[in-house]
Length: 472
Ligand code: IMP
Image (cartoon, rainbow, N blue to C red; front, top):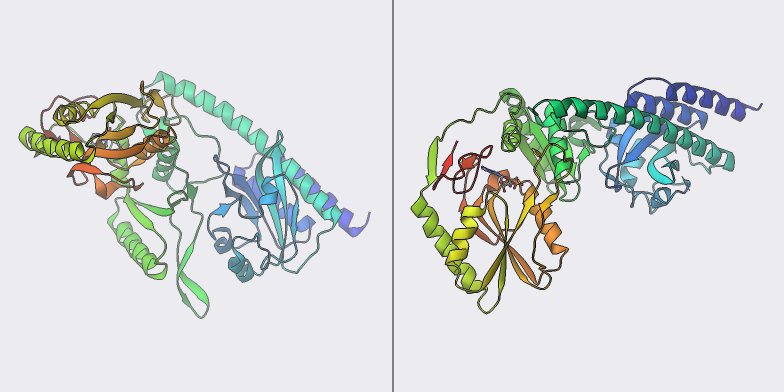
């Protein structure tokens, strides 16, 4: 055996051993990455898995690469060497000048020159990629391509083994949770595995919420250097989440004041140094309220009993609804309008609105699942429209827009049905809590960040029949 064969043989031995071990996902994959890099005498290796929408790559494990390089930003599998996604092995002689390199500057800083990438294929479908990097410019030879392709195959089998084990565990867990009352969002069945280790349980809960509303997320994909001295980075910030569809970073904070102050500072600094980056700081407490509204008792921290303060009286609401109806009647003069409401919070508002609109209208309703519908992992339509809205003028009527996630889902769904026009009217707008910016054409009242009930709005099914709007 020559030296290369010896190296490959040793690498295969180590990889097979790691694959058969019971290490946590990240450690196991990193061990395989290390052996693969050593086998090819390379300086680094990363194993990445496609996220559920098969567009971005999450780092599952790596070896020999700096944290800053691994967290260089979202890796889009369709932009970064897309041939790998098509099942091909890709060899890049010069990463810096190759057009398919998504982050050439970062590669130059990491001092990596060439790359060999292979798809990880499970049952004919690409589920991820392995990429090996070298510090010298290298033309990869056929035996090196065979080697990486074999490692990718072993990875595919190993990941399948882990997935099967998780699946069994999930089924066991959901049997248990079906028998008891759900008390927290984390009692929901787990989404398919992702190679993510969350730093805090509230981050995992938040990820599940995004999953439910089908909002794509990446966990800590980018580290931002904030200050440096003599070419050394002295301050860095890695926001918890990135939502690629809306190009927004999110940092969750806990209720600990010292941490909030520090995070506020980092967010402010990030905005200064990277003015083009959008970031939002979300308070964990706010998100517990979000879980509370779905009828969960979030970690015992939500205390909502009894009406506290009246925000809008019956008369104030009626006056505002009449004005909205007048404006709508004027804007849609000469056209026929379809009003669509989402059950059930909207019932009072849509009936009053309809009674005050002076042009011809038809009305229809949809019902959408919420995370409280226990068995659903994803938001879905429980009751669809009876009306075909193609080429019709549609006005979505909402009781309240909070994070905007429900409305975002519904608007995407309705747009696909090709209405002649689609606008939104909401009675209440909790703008300060918006996560997904949806355009609102008619707004009754803008309200502060408080949980409100009455005039159709509920808390755990109660208070809908309160004629005014109040906080709890
Ligand atoms: P979003 O998806 O976060 O915008 O939430 C929209 C839905 O959450 C609304 O249609 C309501 O059903 C519910 N919701 C949000 N905030 C409140 C509130 O303060 N009181 C009652 N329901 C709310």
